[in-house]
Length: 80
Image 1 (cartoon, rainbow, N blue to C red):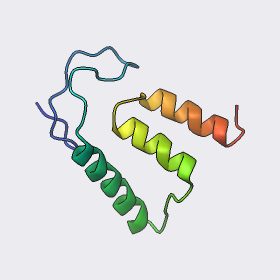
Image 2 (cartoon, rainbow, N blue to C red; image 1 turned 90 degrees about the horizontal axis):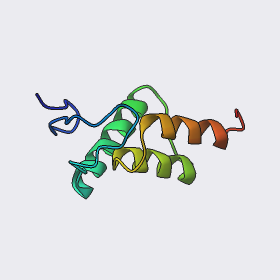
Image 3 (cartoon, rainbow, N blue to C red; image 1 turned 45 degrees about the vertical axis):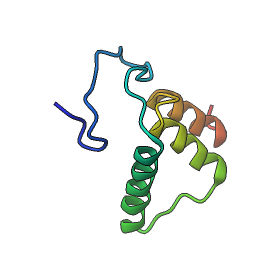
């Protein structure tokens, strides 16, 4: 079974942990960010803040988890 957005096969990484077994390539990270930009653009939105884009890139590169990305977004916006 492969992940529909990256084509990578999921492993048994525990929830909340970055996937250490199959890091995406630079090209896969770029494709993921292009997909995000396209989806947001289709809805009339964009992400232009460099700090926010870096958080998105880090999550797409499996350097941080989705929970960590959300926590960073919240901290950046002064929500926490």
